[in-house]
Length: 453
Image 1 (cartoon, rainbow, N blue to C red):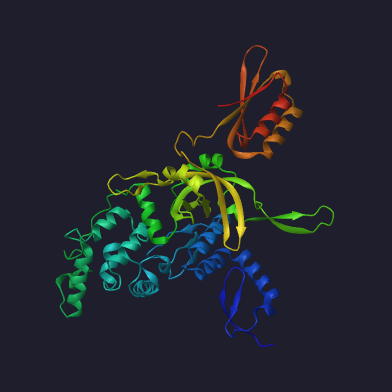
Image 2: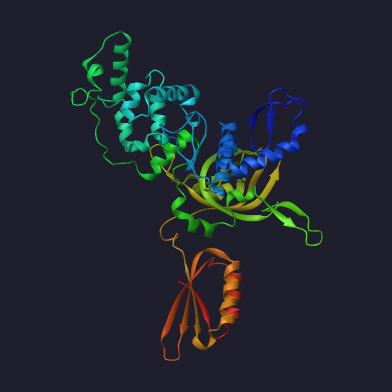
């Protein structure tokens, strides 16, 4: 059998250049894929992400998969990114083609100039070297918003000021003029002596001022051009509050678990979350699409996201009437548009169909994410010294190990003289799990107690 050349690698399929039947090579492909994932995980996932460039839903799924496998997704970098997603020692670097407003052609021009003239020193150096008709204002602004110049030491806010068209000294107009002069054969003193140290004709580049946009604005711009939060996430600081407001991460809805048959020893895969199961999810609103039923009543299809994924949720008329204000969030009196991030908790049934996964909502409520709600609890277990034994501590440890979470545990032992010894255990538990709390009470008996502080 003649050897055939691989054209493209995705997570499950090889495409052969001669268009032949792929199933002939299924066994070989599965082995090759597993080998690549095991020994070259960053390179493999970079290839997968590149193959789905422009398909937001797939990109979101595989970005989440990277995070679960401990592979960090890095923002674009003007001196390290390639045209596509690229494996680097620290993780996977976003490519120029994945930035909205940049694209493959501009990416290739950037790479060509970088190869010719070496790394870009800063934004000023970049706009002077790359043709401004290719790297125009829209392109440069997209690169800045994506974080491509972060490593040069300047904040995104200051970089945007450098190219702001309302700034009379913006560097794009100045660079465009210099490039036109060069094209017409006019050589300025700047061009002649710019590279001569101490000549006085080197470019005047201001020092970094360290002043950045506020966190929400910075992330909003990043998502605008990358389609996804990369350097950070609005929900990032609120991991604890989210864990208390939901039963599952959104990525769990697509996950499967291997189940071993105790009788035969065989394994089967089953969804982590069963169809029809009523669950709670929590996150931020990505979109709200208002619709009308045949009877003219209003409803909505909303998309919520957490740091692991996103999912569509159906809000039927009766519920929509109750939660419309929650879905609108804070509304600007002048523009009538929602302002700021909207955090919600939804309760509903999971439904899988040929349209994908969605939640049929029975409840939608506003979610408070703040320093107050985000503070983990301490579970205080108090018992008299004569009840402290190795056996009892092992039983408590066994219970705590079954209910993992983000809350801490402290053991308070009261002596007969009235003194109290306090011990902090290394366990992290879910302090709100009522089954766990009751099992601890059963172990302690009447003389012990448990409390949340």
